[in-house]
Length: 108
Image (cartoon, rainbow, N blue to C red; front, top):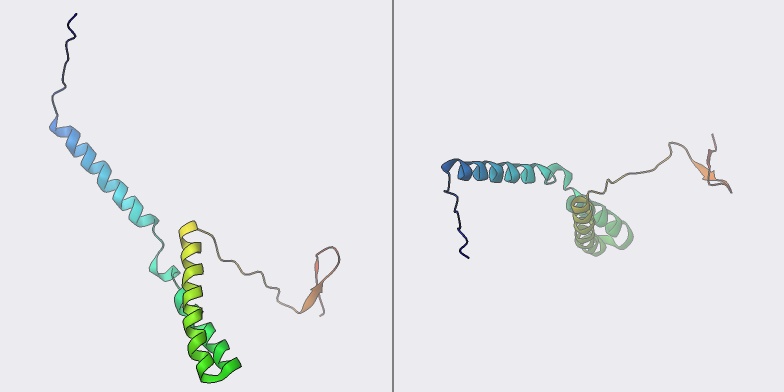
């Protein structure tokens, strides 16, 4: 029993469609990358680390705090950027306390 194999002739339009899909996929991937303006973890970590280190241990603490802050800030910023975790601050505009039911009350 002979099986006849029919090979489809390669069409020139097929390769153009593949190229168009590849270009569209690359452009969408580039748009999905985090923007450079969102990558502030290293700079801010170094600033806050050097400030706190200088405040606590003087100039040597400022240098060490800047290096450690840059490393930790970069790591946290990279993880949040890759996973898409929003960085939110939950601060109240007044001084106060939490009661037994975990509700915040302002002094003033």
